[in-house]
Length: 625
Image (cartoon, rainbow, N blue to C red; front, side, top):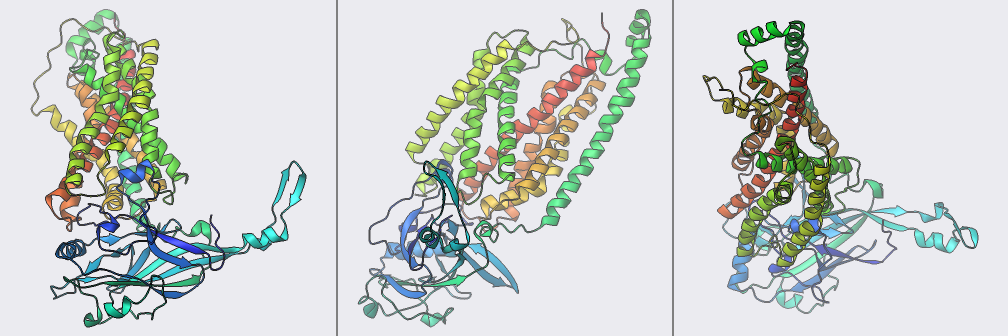
């Protein structure tokens, strides 16, 4: 918390220009805006900010606390053809200028059909309806909300070497001051006479402007035109306190929709739980009881007569095809699931505030790196269980460390070339590439190998039944089993899709997403649904004597990723209608592909591990000589 005294100078920072039309961020000073007297200085940025394409610089906008004033900034040189073309392009692509004061993004309000709409940032310019001319926003009316902080009513008692001491009256006076609790702007275009304006110096007082103005009094973007930039600032006392200052940005619209999503998920869960209950208590228990009551001869005769899961007892634990790939995907799935759960729990408890810009993404990356030890352990132990020994575990651990990061690296490299080509600030600098590779190689890889080593030391899970040497023939089916597996993904998707809409809106429409409590509930429900769906599908396959359940158990719940990706395409076509150009669409689809792969590995792993436990429990109950 920062408390300012009366008249204390405070500075505004500027972030990258952003647009929901292109999703390509660009530098603020790529346009002919006024520059600070002391030159442009970049603010220190964390890993998350760099990955999101933020470029925070200082700006010439300066305020004095609780001093209302109208000031002149600068007048540009005559605009060149290139500058005019760039300004018009940024204006027509709906680029927004993002400013920050005391870590608060600037906010503006507009009226549409009698409804007040809240935006962060303000447009570079605008094109009036029915006109081909473009006008630049060159006059800003800022409103800074301040809360008067009374330090005189607070006594701080501290203990030190000199014993107990009460804060002095002088220190109390120092503590009182103003906290910035809101930052709003009303942008407008104002044409001024450049010749008379050039006589002013930066921060000279000028006459205020009444916005909005008629078109003939607005500043048009055209060649050889000089543009004058000015601003006004008004300080308004507010009852909003410091801890509540982000509430205006984090207003949660549609709480009923979130609750509807949760109720919908609960109905799916109870439906599936009923099926699982029937499988366990009625079918399986009844069959096992009948089976165990018979003598050996009768059991042999019953085996000849019966069909279903009991007939695949000698094949159910046969090694699946591509067993190494399965172990690798399950290991990576464990790592992603643990990262998601820990991140969302921390965010729901308020440890990852939006005030800490980029903290959420930074936290996710660091968690992923350190959770490699669990991925190595689970993947290698599964490998030892399938193979009956730990031979070849190093290659499994290496593949676990490289599989998902490798996919992300390839997609990001391709997208980065697109961003570099378009000279966007969203392009990752080479130094950041080496930083990420160093973090991966120095933290994630050694921890994954260490986890794999622990996995070899753990006792492999013993299968309850022996596997026959000759595989049992699988009866022909009327329809392909993969059709059922793909259809199973619709149930987990049903629990997820409403929350997915809010997440996509926050990513691509520049909205804040902070309903992590709801997201945590949805995540827990998703885990339960994935586990139930996979168990039901596995049992159905075993009942038709199909013992190849390993991959089908993985994709029964993992197929939700296919529907997530298709929904992302649907969102692009119907909700992001303004997204323009093939580059923007490729960026969107690239990031959506990374998200879908992560969801597939996570949900597939949940379903597979639950199915593995179910099959192990089921066949450990059967008596076999």
